[in-house]
Image (cartoon, rainbow, N blue to C red; front, side, top):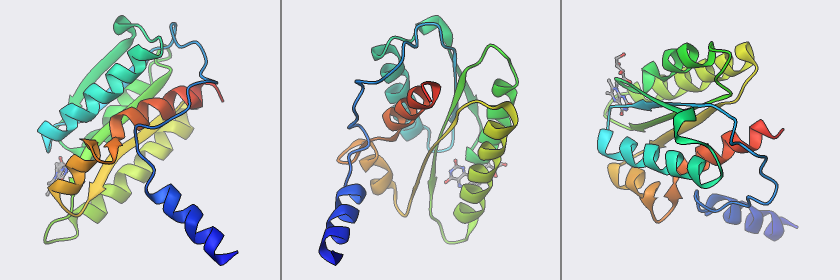
Length: 167
Ligand code: DLZ
């Protein structure tokens, strides 16, 4: 049984962020999405943003219903999410950022603040607010999750939003 558990863990930990099953997706052609994208590590967050945007379009969202906004860094994702989520016409918010570990614990503080903050926003407005934060030790690991060997976290975040709209 232990081996089975280990195998299951490995399968989960190696899951490609861009692999998903869309067979039970709802119609999202009338849904409005807010994207909040951190400008810190912008080359990477642009790729996450493109992944999320293209995934929404691929599954039926209309370009005019996707509102993309930037914030300076990941710490500001929470307020950006709230400013979008408070609008009744927004159905789901997708937060995208890249936080790389440095010499200090800044990454821990930012990651925890964003996780708690956007959880709060989602519960306050009763709508999906998705945690599309890449949190890695190195830039290379971040690129691996932005169109690299582990897929694209932006794609995963968009899929999570669609799935939660169908909940
Ligand atoms: C200050 C800072 C640092 C050191 N590192 C990152 C990072 O890796 N990723 C990121 O998105 N933002 C970082 N920031 C900026 C903070 O998120 C925030 O924008 C500033 O502290 C201003 O509140």
